[in-house]
Length: 390
Image 1: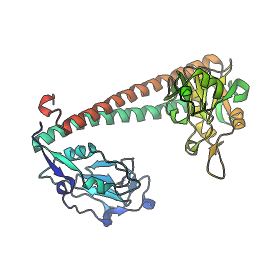
Image 2: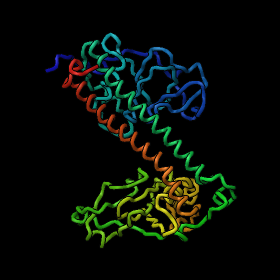
Image 3: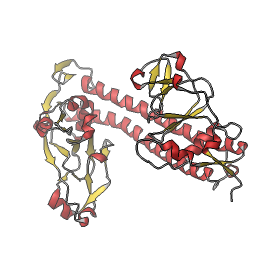
Image 4: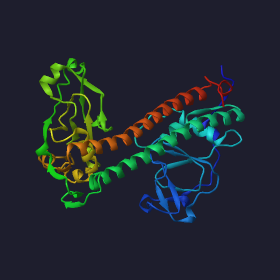
């Protein structure tokens, strides 16, 4: 049984000096500037501004709470506040270590009630109030895990940028420093061809088996829809269908197919592509590109990634806002084509970086799981800090 007290959120706060004079409207936020702007959005820093008169460099650290987003941010550096309903919380430092206070807020469950007024729900909650020395130890443990997560995220970001740069270099310069030629898709090595996908691939469409038959959705065949297109390689997905469902409402694409989303609102932002490493079925918003004997699947995947901006330009938007990548546009889309040996070497070089990115993504996921477990255990006193090696 915990010997901790609790404290209602309104009683845990003291008045802070932040006001409208420290806020900046969204239209005045720029990409580069002297002072970071923090608002309630998912990004920690929304942008920058140069107006020194708006800078908050007092009462730090502060906790930012999104009345719309339910997002908490711990801010311990001078910043400017976004003027979008963001709430600024200053914990009573006689009661709370600020970092512990932030973690205690993260542990709260605040259900969504629509676009705003989540601060009302927050104000009805109570927080654990252990002794300050124990608060500091808890905050130290959770901060250590959080820093490890941040380190993995920086590695992933760097690796992603390196992969993008490597793809650009390999698909424009090749491997042998040979002379380049200008083509309609940009510079490529002189010995490479440039071909439409229809010359070296075949295409398959998909479909959705009837949702009215639950037995259709109890099979072992992976069924891919746009929501699954978050990774470059797919070995399994969320939904599965039966053989009967496949025969009545979809079609199996072979392993080595490269999937591309051809309809949906995601196409307003990007064109997702992914390589199927096992046979999979797809829904009607997808297209399967099946390479022929002159084209490696992994090379096709990376060619489409490297030329994603070109593919994105082919997306059309209907009068009611639906985004579509027409089948004839996919078939006519042109890619560079070296010989198979070069394709293999290029794909291998890129996949090495991809594997590094996946490794660190797995480490980040494990650390996130550890953080959530520790947050719950420590904030409910199920695990006490004297039981852990600090």
